[in-house]
Image 1 (cartoon, rainbow, N blue to C red):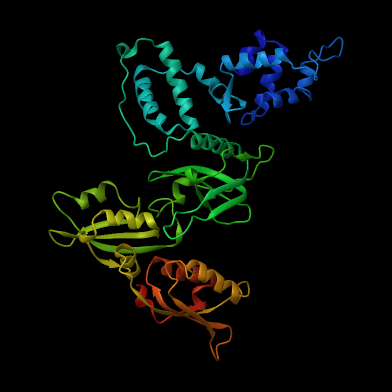
Image 2: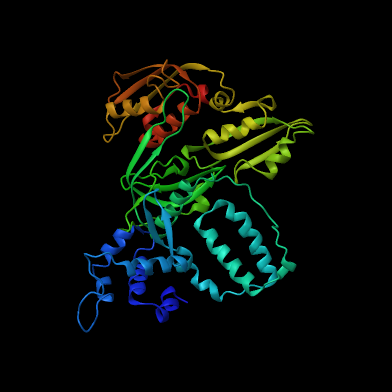
Length: 449
């Protein structure tokens, strides 16, 4: 039954006007003053007008006490909810539970399904995301019908870890993000801080327009994944680093959501990080009776597809990961197996990421830049992505870019004292992708492979 159908037969036109206002803007919150201001405009002013006299039921200049009383009544009935933005002002918002779950009134569950759903609801409620309200509503409605089930004893059958931070501010932001995704509404001026670094303050990001696609949990961290209109790749914005206390969701506009399959997009990713191009890696892993690394990796593979494990002898096993994306999560997981249990890592740059030996060498390569990429832009990008700036990992490295005689358009790039790690490998792979394999050469592949 629709919310309007439930109240029309027993409400005044003031209640009707208020409900129509909140239904028209289901994700928006209003102060009392804003509600009163909206009632002066069409179509709400029409609802509050006496058809015979064509005069308003209440005067705009006076405080419409009766209208506020009707608003408070709707709050008591659970149709409108109060959102406390600060200590001084109450804001009112449509109770999404009523608007979204009214159809659940007619859903009947058998006892077995109800027990299972109740168990899932208790586990999922830890996440406090909007969809859990639907599950809870369905459970509550059926419990009212089936009073006394399980002899009044209710217990959970399953449980999940709780990776989401129990912070009311974050939960409220997540709630707004959820409905922005559902309604394809852009988020304006989204501010968040970048990764933390012991050497400097995290970078501050300000996305003027952000199109949210999905909320994703990955290894204890929650992200909103989406795109900026002028970017081709997805951004992963950590929700706990969003600085906006209240999101500016443009409810008057919608964006066109391109084809996006979340079930396959992160194939090859250990977590949410998708850096550069997928690579193949391998290492030898020592097994043991107490810390059974092999059984652990078989039960919880590093990646869903492309992992193989084969025995070399009674103690050591070879682990291969095919088409996997590099990222800090991969390094953390392999390290968690115990560095003393890992050897013969391939490629060589992964060894540096794992053991941090500080190996620095010279690396030389040549490129022929296309017309779309000028030399200065290439140099700027190289400095940034190889972290050659002051205070970064490769600040002590030196580089030179020179024209190659008798080879028009080709540049020779020399990197001295550069860390041989995934940062260098990722930059080289990205460069090859951007300019094409025929426009890249090197005699030093063995340094990375």
